[in-house]
Image (tube, rainbow, N blue to C red; front, side, top):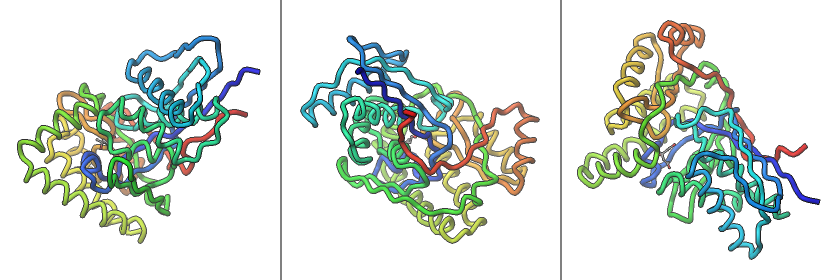
Amino acid sequence: MKKTISASAPGKFHLVGEHSSVYGKPAMLCALNKRVKVTVEEKDSDNFFIEDNKAMESVVAIRSYIDKKYKIKTPKFELVVSSQLPIGRGLGSSAAFCAAVSYALFGLNGLIGSLDEIYEAAYLGEKVFHGNPSGGDLAVSVYGGVIWFRKETENIKLVRKLKVASSLFSNMLLIDSGKPVEGTYEMVVDVVGRRYKKEQVLVEKFLSSQEKIAKEMSSAMLNHDKNLFEKTISQAGYNLEKLGIVGKQAKRMIKDIERSGGYVKVSGGGGIKEGSGMLIAISDSKNDMIELCKENNWEYLKFNLEQAGVKSENE
Ligand code: MEV
């Protein structure tokens, strides 16, 4: 009988560590209860129902890696994808897609892959999307929860799940500053990468500051220190603005949110010319923040933290 395998993986937001994680600094990321689902069905010929060329190429890259590594020939298949995540807003939709594809292709081949093995295969797909990813987005999609992540080398990545009180996140909201016209690849390579070449000292300062904030934020989370948690969110956001990855529209929104008593930062690769993707915002009153969004016609997303990473969706 021909097999059908469905799998899903969660999207993410960054608490800290965007861009600096590409340079080997730590990041903290949270999985969201919004997932990308992929269904692969064994067929006589390949048919991927996806419009994005990069997504198409990433499926091919993941399949080739699995074939080579496990000395097998993945059967031909049809692939359908559906997403609860807004695309291109810094919420890790491409990583969630790669994680789900990798899991589904292991299943289609009758392989029982560990999460580490699924990660390794999916990473090849992430590279198609982002060129030189840190692997952090993918780590949180594969393992779920709240993670401390550090890319030590291309082949060694440290992933540590953190036990944090979800109450720290109960007043957090994701607020859309608009879709960036620049992709993550462009932001990583053309914007920050070029800046690193031209102004290395300045970017190095940003990198060490991000590391310091990440450490402070982790202790704030582990000690349930709400004030320090909020303060470090603002600091991480301010650093990203200084790095030059935040556009005017998002900067205006950040000011408005801060004026109303909130703590806020961009989350993800950012964007300059138009939107900068999702902002994470936290304040004493979620309802007040929702009111602010309504007054300004800002789209927002309520969410819960997600413990499960990539998983089967077969009944
Ligand atoms: C994108 O979500 C996060 C970046 O740090 C890129 C990466 O970590 O691969 C900008």
